[in-house]
Image (cartoon, rainbow, N blue to C red; front, side, top):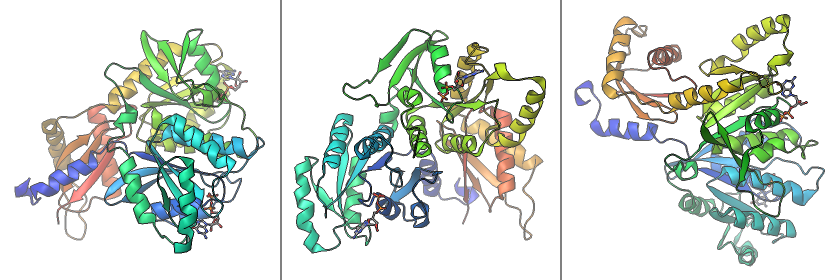
Length: 455
Ligand code: GDP
Ligand code: GDP
C-alpha cells in the first residue's frame, strides 16, 4: 500500500470504516407535541428533513443516519404521525411499539413543562416490556428554571431524566453522550444470529399485495408464534415456519395481518412497520401485485430495503390473474421500474393457487448467499487489475484516475473499499459495480463501494 502513496494507517482506517456493517438503531418515541421532531432534527443536524412534514402527508422516510462523537447510528423518527381512530393512547402505543421493535435503544421524550401524563405512563410500560436500554429526555427545559420540572420525571422509574431544549440545543450534547452509551457497538446483537439459528425473513410490500395470503400459504398449519407477549394484541410477532426442510423466522407477522390502522395515518404506520420488519430481518421478500401498476409506494419500500442493506427477493404475486397482454406490459414495466433491484432473484408466484411456492426458498437462499459473499483480496485485485487495464477511467483535465487496489471490508451486505489515484466518476463507479456483479455474483444483495482518493 505504501508504495502506492497511501499511508498504511489511512488504509486500515478506511477498511474499518467501510466494514462497519449495520448501524445501531435509536428509536425516538413519545406523545405528540413533546418535541420529537424538533429533537430528531437536532440529532441528525438537518433542519429540512422533518420540519416540512404536515400531518397526514405520507412520509418517505422514518429512518435517518446520524453521527455523534464520531459514532454513527440510525434514528427512527416517530414524530409527524397522527392520532388515529383508536384514540391517542392506542396511537401512541402503536407507533412506539413498532419503533421499539426496530431499535437497539430508545430515546423517550417527555414534555417537562407538562410532566408525566397517563399516556407517558403507557409508553413506559411498553418500554419496560421491550427490555431495551432507554434514555429519558425531559424536553422543553429552555432555561435553568425548568430543571426542577425535569427532576419530577424521576417518578417514571426510567432513571435519570436528561433536561434538554430541543429548540435551542441546550443539554442535547449530554443527552447524546448518554444515547451513545445506551447503543450497542455491534447491532449484530439484535441481529443475533446464533450459529445455526433460523434465518430471519421480512415479508414486505404495500397493502393488499398478498403478504398475509403468502404467509398463510407457506405456513400451512404448522406455525409457531414466538415472542408473543401477553396482554396486547398488537405486538409484532415472529413466527417460525418450516420450509424446504429448514426452519425460518418470519419477523413481524402480526404487522402483516393487522388491519387495524386502516384509516388516517395508515401509510405512516405501514412505513414504520416496514422499517421495523426490515431492520429485524436478514432478507426481505418484497411482494409486488402484478395485477396493478408498480407504484411509487412499491419503489419506496424497495428503496428502504436496499438502503438498509438487506438481502432481497422480489416475489411477483397474483400470477394466476395475468393474461398474455398484461404479462407483456408487466415485463416492460419491470424493465423500467425495477432497475434498482435488477440483481434480485425473482419468483413469479400466486399466493392463491400456490404456484411456484417451491421456488421461494431457493431464491431466498441465493440472496442470502450473495449477501454473505466474501471475495479474497488476491482475487479481487487480480480482477481490478484486469478491469483497469481493459477499461481505464476516461482522462479528465489531462489526468487519468486509476484504481490502485481494493479490498472487501465487510459482508451482509458486501462492502468494498477501492483506493484510487484520483476521483472516480459516478459512471465509472457504476461500471465497476456492474463488473463486480458479473464476476462474483452477488445475486440478491446490494453492494457498497466506497472510494478513497490518494491525497
Ligand atoms: P412532536 O409532535 O413530538 O414531533 O413535536 P414537535 O417537534 O413537532 O414539537 C411540538 C411543538 O413543541 C413545536 O411547536 C415545537 O417548536 C415545540 N418545541 C419542541 N421542542 C421544544 C423545546 O425544547 N422548547 C420549547 N419551548 N418548545 C419546543
Ligand atoms: P396484504 O395486505 O399484503 O396482507 O394482502 P392480502 O394477503 O390480505 O391479500 C389482499 C387481497 O389479494 C385478498 O383479497 C387476497 O385474496 C388477494 N390475493 C392475495 N394473493 C393473491 C394471488 O396470488 N392471486 C389472487 N388472485 N389474489 C390474491
